[in-house]
Amino acid sequence: MLTVQQHSIRGYASDAPPKQGMSGLAYGAAAGMGAFGVGYYYMTSQQKHSLQAEGPAPKAFQGGEQGFLSLRLDSVEELSGNTKKFRFALPEPDQESGLPVASAVLSKFQDPGMDKPVLRPYTPTSDTDEKGFVDFVIKQYTNGPMSTHLHEMVPGQRLDIKGPLPKYPMAENKHNHIVMIAGGTGVTPMWQVARSIFKNPNDQTKVTLVFGNVTEDDILLKKEWNELENTYPRRFRAFYTLDKAPKDWVQGKGFITKELLKQIMPEPNEPNIKIFVCGPPGLYQAISGTKNSPSDQGELTGALRDLGYSNDQVYKF
Image (cartoon, rainbow, N blue to C red; front, side, top):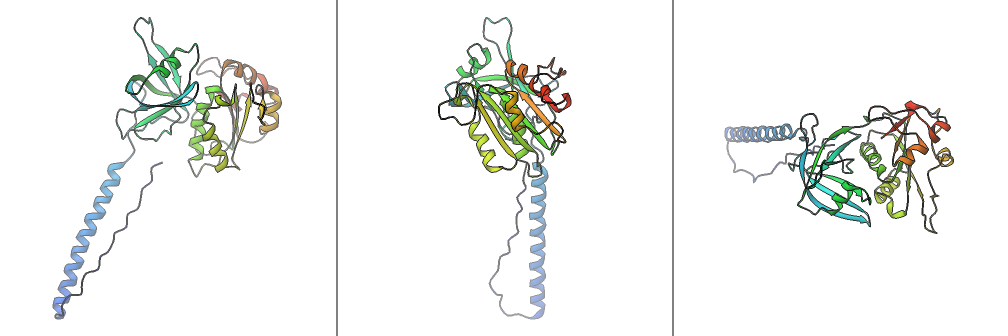
């Protein structure tokens, strides 16, 4: 959200003028007021012009016939042994990604000798109104050609990216309570939605995150989730479960189960709740069932159906 800083016009005192007749004083006062009026008009006109000229920031990703943008990799930050944060520069420094929440982008690369390009959707982790860049947190998978390609990139190289790929349209206070059930890198669209909620002071949506991973190091954006929980303790809670938990681990162990969800989720009959699911195929099969296509959510199955939730309460990313 753009904020407009209010500027105050500062008055300056001058030395006392020499004694003179009333006509001189009146003339001096009139001249002073005239000069002040001209100065005030000039300053306020300049401020109005500046505010009008600022306007909404241009959007980098415009969809439609725009096609792919060739974005330069600006920096790489290693977050864990197999996860890195990639920052790509937008074509112009004053541009925002312009992506609606929730949405993703499509990345593409093709090495010499490849018959077809590799395509992979990713959800940015930077705020949609950040100017000049877009961030991605990406885990490398052994048999993942795109993630491997990205992890081999160095700053200065380029990647083709286009968007947006619209997902679930969010709006201020659209739901009373959102439950996010995620596994692995499926947490990135959850972060995009959560950020849009908690950076908006008018949005009072409650959010519960249930996040499954293999090890503690695999928990993406753990620091950022902790900050949300500390800042909004009445509105945000995070529950983690690990397949390979350390001995001192005090949260969930193993997969996300129906029993765990029953303990921490709002009841199905609570008004205006929404459940987001995103993760590997096994998570979908156990929790909600898979979707048939990007435009067909498919039948609700798994733990959520068993717990009494309905198709219209669940969205599968």
